[in-house]
Image (cartoon, rainbow, N blue to C red; front, side, top):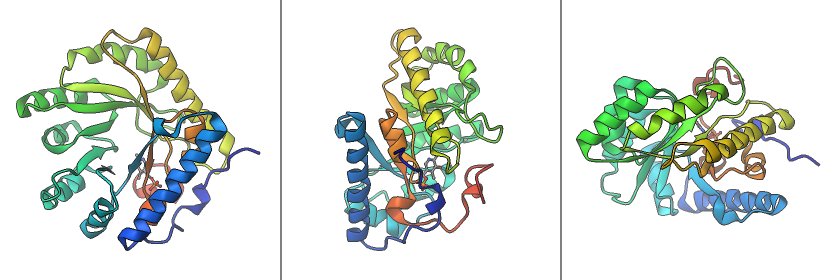
Length: 261
Ligand SMILES: *Cc1c(COP(=O)(O)O)cnc(C)c1O
């Protein structure tokens, strides 16, 4: 039987309000990742769980830290920056930005983020690189690809990827790690799987053709509703919010243009 999506569960995850509850949810998601790995003949150690804390209040993020989370995903840079400022006392907490970024906010990202998963233009790459050089920092980056073909989704078109990647070695403060995508937001598991397969295939091609010095090891794909399918298709990073923290108050259309209301 095909692994179903859980996209119809969006908005139904119970709110996690204690360290224990978040810890339980983390363990449950990890167990589901491990089960998906077994189905695919993969080692669970090859899949990193990135907890996505967007819209969650600082108090909830502190619970997540107490539950063992050391890297948190946020999709809006100002929100992430405010949280970073408020939690300077947690010196080992690092930040991954997973949402579209306007070039004029590159300086903010350069100041505090450890990872940026939504690189989708050379203009942005240049701005990030320049600001990172000024800060004396480097940043792990993932190139975002639009695998669903939806006009509303961010990311490079698959056919634009090779030329884009050839230009990346010029930006020495960007440590290219791999590719990222958001699958079609659908309860049709076969169509969701197709998006993940496409990203995997693109990475295989890049591994052969990418400029020397660039390593494409990572595939960031899968979220609460579809991470098991993503793991079956080779994800090395899954970005999971609601299944760990509980449902968000706002509908998904608020975060991804074109998502179901
Ligand atoms: C919010 C978000 C996620 C996580 O979605 P959940 O439904 O909370 O698991 C993953 N990726 C991106 C880019 C996001 O913005």
